[in-house]
Image: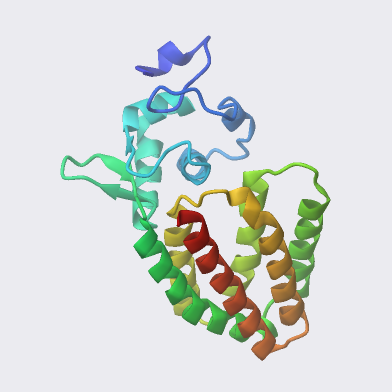
Length: 240
């Protein structure tokens, strides 16, 4: 267990529960591009949750996390509060933060909600989505297809890039925020065999982007609905 910032100097840092991370934690310091430690702490904790290095239900100890990141507790506290507001963390009766757990029922219900709301948002965004954002998302998909290895972070980053186009440019901030909130919930569900989703996700995202680029509202609505139905069926198949 990491006990202090000083103790971590001169030896490899570990995750807040004492485990050795699969990715190199020292890379966190190397990625710093600003003095906003709270924002940097937020990004790193969100990344650890996304990569399941902090698991559903796991308590996040502020002091241990600060030692792991090599920063003071204040920006860590601010980051945890932001993650709580966004639904990634919850606070227990003892005021400790823990990673929110999403079970299969909540995941499937959230996907059904996304099918309704995000499909409508996809149709709404066709007149507003910038061509450069669409081209950038397509280029990312091409890089994913060309890679000969699976990288979960790149998979999630591409997924976010595509779905953010819909949420950010649907022309309705309330709808966009609902989409993003539902995506937080569905992303917390621990999908098994995630690598198997890369090919269908890439293909379905390309179809969606094509419809948006063509300003085909009905086609974009169908493409998004088909994509989310595919996610729903994949969960049913892999769990059962």
